[in-house]
Image (cartoon, helix red, strand yellow):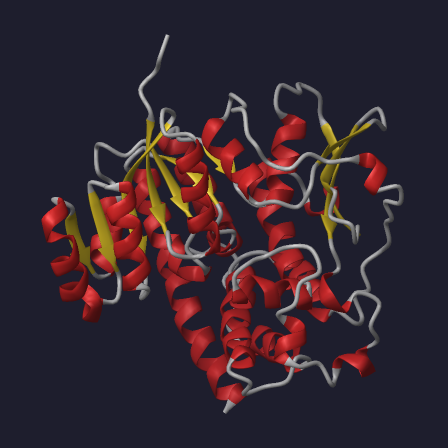
Length: 385
């Protein structure tokens, strides 16, 4: 018997995860229907996507592009909104079943909160939501009885390993590719260029997350996210470098047995699973041929060279608003590196100085998170200047 398609809102539809989500939609027109598309500044691609997928509504957050989007979509009977407040409102539309949070950084926090409060299930690609406010989000999920399916390949792997598994977790093992600078010394990293940092060996991602992968901050953020997603202690999360990116993560149980989720590095697979769960939909994704991968290797991350990962561990241990401080300082530092205003090794230095320079709140409220983010960004900017 045919079932009605799931109506989805994609926050950040013009980014890397957003565009790949639309590829999944295109492959499953009977199962998925696009209800809302949003973009920050990329009006041209948003218009093109809206014409192709015919959503009920679109939001262009940068209000200076509103007229352009409005005029282009008037013939198609698509509602057009602009601004941050519109973004927070469209996720609450009664016609939306699932909200895909594919926005980059802290900006994804408030729309995700509004969607949860409106009892929408979340396909979470915006890891910063749980990094910044994991305690608050966890509480809201329980209060509103909504379901989060992770989109990150590592967290999707853990989620898949735990699906239908009644037994207790002993340890979560997050795999990391090691990025483009695996094995490099601190001295070698002094000369790193932007072009080199943007050249990831295995994954095709947006600029910010690619730099985070190069510094290994991305893995640090994932460690913090894993704590909240899977309800484990800090000591139950381990990172192992796995350069081939075939094993996406593992779970060790109390009897010592380990489950792993494997596959070729392709973000469309975890995106599709987040939207299809608890089902698995047929796909034409490339299949893993073990004959081509006869050597899967593992090594410990170098925390003295990749200080961002070490700083994320410190933030996880400290708790409170410290992860929010780390996230905000990292966003400012990475933005400065992308504009070639600072060197690669200055990224962890700025983050550490922000951690030492900001006030600490052991049990933050939402307003504490907002204030922490604002003030940390100002501090990090001053450190750059």
